[in-house]
Length: 130
Image 1 (cartoon, rainbow, N blue to C red):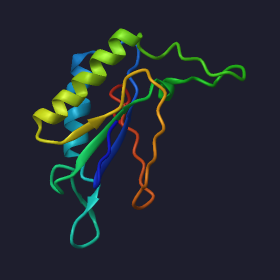
Image 2 (image 1 turned 90 degrees about the vertical axis):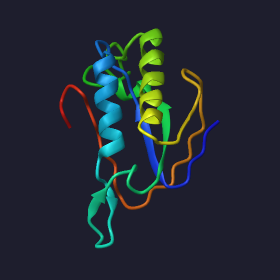
Image 3 (image 1 turned 135 degrees about the vertical axis):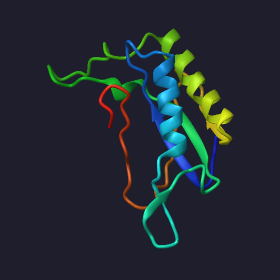
Image 4 (image 1 turned 60 degrees about the horizontal axis):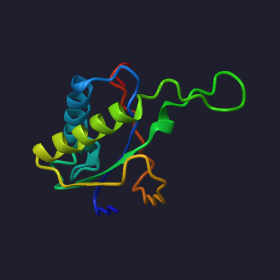
């Protein structure tokens, strides 16, 4: 469905209780987070600064709880209707911020290939403030 060159792969999970304000917070953070290297090799530039793109993938399994038993529980994930709406809202907000955004199909099985540059994975959570 979607493919990008330089940019960010965002695995987006929408939690039960997430609202429009969470989508705005997430889009702002994704667009402005300074995690790309500048000329001195320091993480000092955002995806916007480097002219990058975003590959936005819906990923409800990020909300899995494995605290009890041996099978993950997904009760913390938003209902599909809410998850899809907020997922699409984040994509739209990123586009409004001038970023090219590619997506998958919400709720479908996907084969995702990711080639990372450097060992950088960052967790953002609207409730925890990561």
